[in-house]
Image (cartoon, rainbow, N blue to C red; front, side, top):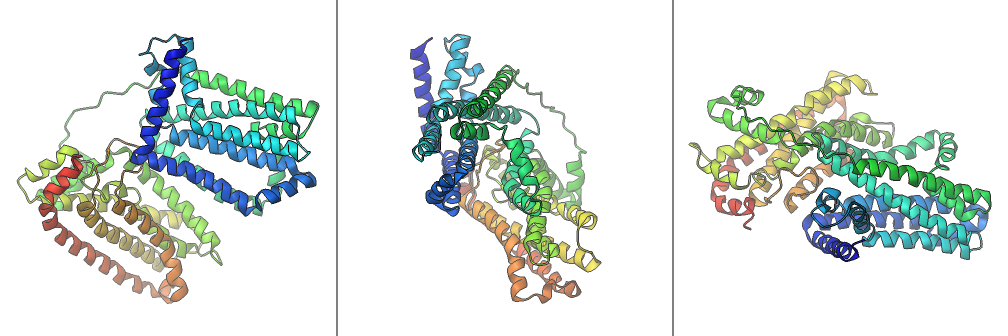
Length: 523
């Protein structure tokens, strides 16, 4: 084994990891990993802290404590590995390691050693060992079986994390993989909020679930820690079986040939759907609007978030409506529907020229007012965001648990249009005064400026909370009989948008050099 070169690769991994944590996306990943650990600590404190855990152990509930702790650490390790190792794992893949004078066995050892020596793996191993030693010190744990169970679970945990990392890398290589990955992230994010109410309304399902969880690696490790004899041996056997099966899957995934990139078509279609949609804006603005429609719809993240925004809004409407007294899904929809109009396009809308790079210069070389490019981009975003409104109204008619009348549909449409125009009015100013150079091809990550993040997150929070707060202060406008009171809101939003569009045009030309320096990465 070439230990010298493998050691150099491990040092290179640490250097790259340190460099990544100093980048903007690396700091965000580090924050998310720390946030996950903080959530686990807060959950422990909310349940009574270590004192409550020790009391549960003394009362004979130590195995349940071990199950919860081991499962939490297991999930934290997988998520932290996926977040902090994203991008680095591809650098140390077998394909890249072939550049070094290493044999196949050495490449396999180097690939896994560079992954398992990441600092957070040592942290999670210490946490599990501390749990095993703590249970032994309390007089309820099995020292020998507990240490062996922790070591076997550590290996199993690492293999699961590697499989997740490989699946993520392979998904990102495929067309539509980003949408699938973002959908999985949303599903995992909202899964705890869904399971809690489900088990509360179906208490008989929890014992049945626990029976199946006994065959999971973390529950088997807890059994090996707390029991003795054949019961502890059976727990270790379950972990070994899981590890062997997962190792076979990992080897299969590593040997899977990489996805070939299909050749892009260079055929120019002068009568595509983009040109037909842009024709509604006249012969002067039509080609520009068609250009921006292409710019939006050819972006992977825009397509992914646009497709996922509709089921996400449906889920939020149901969750928020269920939590309200009396199940007011209509009031929840008045807040969630506006968010659906900008969630899919927000990444480019609040940073309109941040992804154009050197192509930004061409907007000042074409034979028209440069501010027309700003207006055309905003019009294209309005078209795409507004197209969600009829879909949302049709979905409301089809699956709404409340009885619907025409006045409710008008109110929902007015609420959606108000949010659409207000967001786009504010996005014009953020695009001019707080742009940021972004990567158009990046499917994941947060590359918005501070103003863009504030506008997007603030708009989401206002959309979800404002109707509920206003309803408590003044419920009359939310009655379907007073539907006409929502129409002025649309007029005000449209007026603000038109004024912003007119005022932003001259400023766009005046800030040309500043914008050019930012989008080209010179500032």
